[in-house]
Amino acid sequence: MPGDDETNIQWHRKCCELLEPYAAGRYLGESDIFDDLPRAEQAFKSANWRRLHELKAKYDPEGMFFGFFDGL
Image 1 (cartoon, helix red, strand yellow):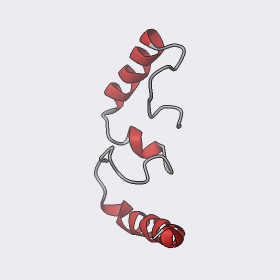
Image 2 (cartoon, rainbow, N blue to C red):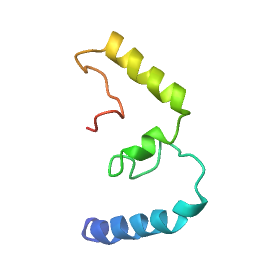
Image 3 (spheres, one colour):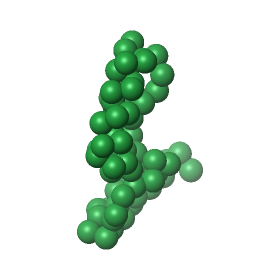
Image 4 (spheres, helix red, strand yellow):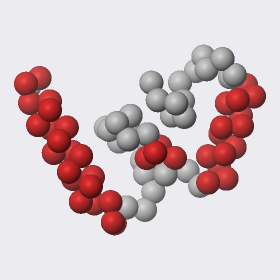
């Protein structure tokens, strides 16, 4: 129910916090990826994340297409 949104958001954040010590990577479809953008970076190897930035800067300098680099 819409009235329960904040309760669910807080529950999800707490679960993520408790599981953090056991996390190894990320899944980009996580429901709160936009709430915690550094999680998007954790879904890639460092070299691949840098390469994505380079490609986006080269082929989409105006930011026409969505990316996890700058939020929504």
